[in-house]
Length: 147
Image (tube, rainbow, N blue to C red; front, top):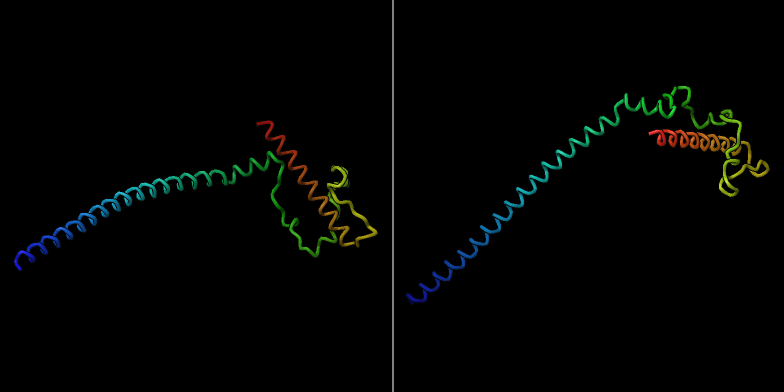
């Protein structure tokens, strides 16, 4: 009986030692992982600080003013903000038709016999927006070629 007790205690001691070794190994592994994560967090925070600094430089009002001047843009005036109901009273911004700048089938042409007065004004607004877009594109290309 004494031999059985001795062997049992020895077996239990070996099992506990094995479990203790595994716990120690897992703990060290987790510590290494925690250190690596802390380094990664510090790197990410540093990169975030750099990105915030870059963002503040890119969105600085003086820089935006210079870019707007290069593109010929002006600040928005309160008179330029209108409601949808006021679109009917808008005059045509430019006398030319956008459809003449596109190949056939690319721009829709207005057919007064099919659409009413509201559609005609909506088409004029669309033409004006496309014209403005084309002008801005041309200015942007000029600026990019100059740089």
